[in-house]
Image (tube, rainbow, N blue to C red; front, side):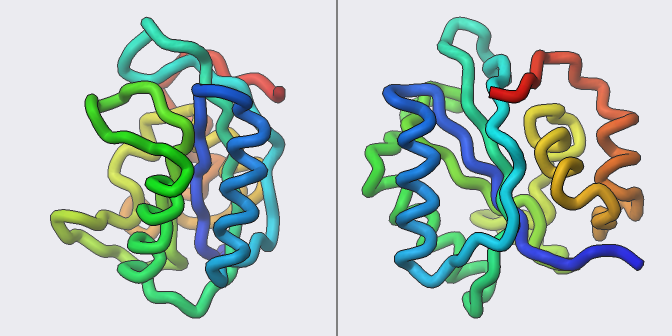
Length: 161
């Protein structure tokens, strides 16, 4: 039997990264998005550009009554409140919060794509997700997260922090 849940990826590479993750947890909880399970914190090589500091990433399973669109809206507000500025793709950030999976829902809208379209090619996403939800099925591909991690072509470093 596969797992069901809402999974978010948190990432930061500016300032006090651990504190940024903790603050993101606080803001999520304050907005009705409660954490059920957390992966370890992982230090990861920057994706897309190597001329920036390493990231701290974590995947969390959350519970909320919000639909995916409302969840995204709250996440964007939290990112803005925490100083996220979207200047360049794959640029530095105080916080980044991505919706990876929302149960078995498949959403393909210009502003919201679930499951996250790039997660299967990113070790910094799959490794912490496999830690807390190894048997979760990817609703489009049909493989478990563990299997996707085994097949992941990304070789960038992902190590426990």
